[in-house]
Length: 150
Image (cartoon, rainbow, N blue to C red):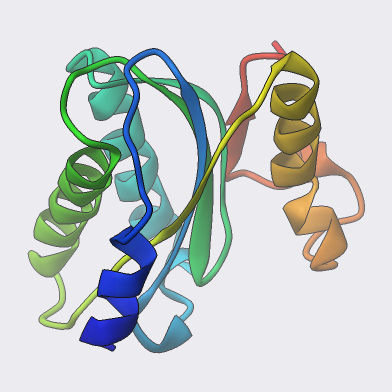
């Protein structure tokens, strides 16, 4: 798995004030975020990244075994280090109750090209629970947010 993780980072560039779509999975795709408390811990970690000035979250959805996060990078820190901080904080808080690995190594990301791509990606991310048949209406799913839908 380590080789795969290194391959994911090979062509990654971090540009301050650019938008990125990030997807990361739980270790062995265990459905840790079906648990309300675990999902809230992850959401608080995303919000803390914004409060710390590292990111501006456009939208996110927490699925049972992975998350999608559309963000604007607001720091000179690399995208990899920002994602690592969120994953690390989430792992630390969840480890208080469990002694298991939370995340797979690495993550997938894509640089958002323009405003049309940004809006399309936000729609795609928010619709994940619908495509997975977790709910019939997105308003019924508790673990998402989007600045476009306030």
